[in-house]
Length: 258
Image 1 (cartoon, one colour):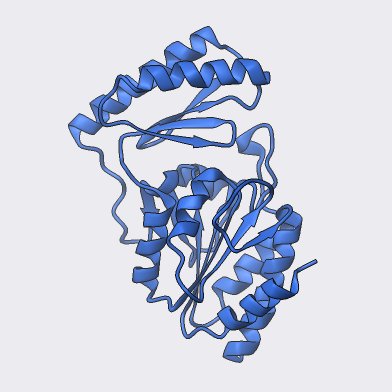
Image 2 (image 1 turned 135 degrees about the vertical axis):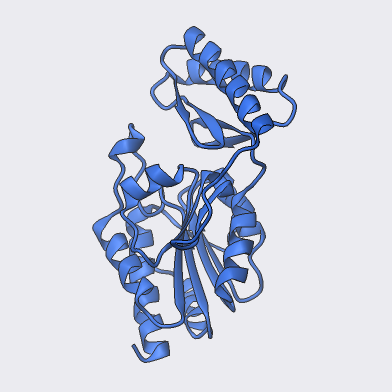
C-alpha cells in the first residue's frame, strides 16, 4: 500500500520537466539473497524500469555497490540506463564513457588491501572476499553473527593501517576502496549529466544514506526496509517498492503524454 503522502509527492515529482529515476539494486530492485550472483530484480520492478527508460524527458540509473560488470549480469539494464557501480567509483554514461583506470599508486594500495582481507579470511573461513576494479569486499553473510563481528573488527584494524583506503560499511559487508567516492557524489553527477530538475532515489543500505543526503527540495527519497534513514519516505520491501515504481510510471506517462 502506497501512503497518501508518498502518492502526493510522486504526483508532484512526475510533473518535472526532466526527471531522473535512480535506484539501488540489491535489496531495492532485487530481494537480498545468500549469494550475490543469484540476485535478480523482481519482474514487476524490472518492467517498470524498462518502461521508464522509454518515457520522454525521463532518465533512469542504477546506483549500486556492485562492480559494473556484476551489476550488468544481475540487473540486465536497458541500454539507456545509466550505471554507477562500486559506490560511485565506477560509472557508465554511454558508449564513449572512459573505463576506470587506477594510478600505479592506487593499484599497489589495492593489492595491499586485498592481502589484508585475505589474511582475515584465513582466520575466519566462513567469510569470503570479492575483488572489484577499485576495491575489495569482505562478505560475512554466511558467518554466524559473532564470527562476522569478529571478522569485521579484524578487517577494520588491518585496513586502518593502510593510509588512503576508504572503508565503507554495508549490510553484512565491509568494503575497502582506493577511489574515494560515494552514492551522493554519483547522484550529483547524474543530476548534472541529465539536466534533471527532479530526482527520485531509492535504496535499502547504509551506503544509500549518502544519496538521500544530497536530495533537494522537490526530490523524492525512499528507504526500502528497516533502519534509520534521512529519506522522507519508506516502504517495507522490494515488493512494495515495485508497486511504487509502477505507480510512478503511470504518473509520468500521464504527465508527459506518453
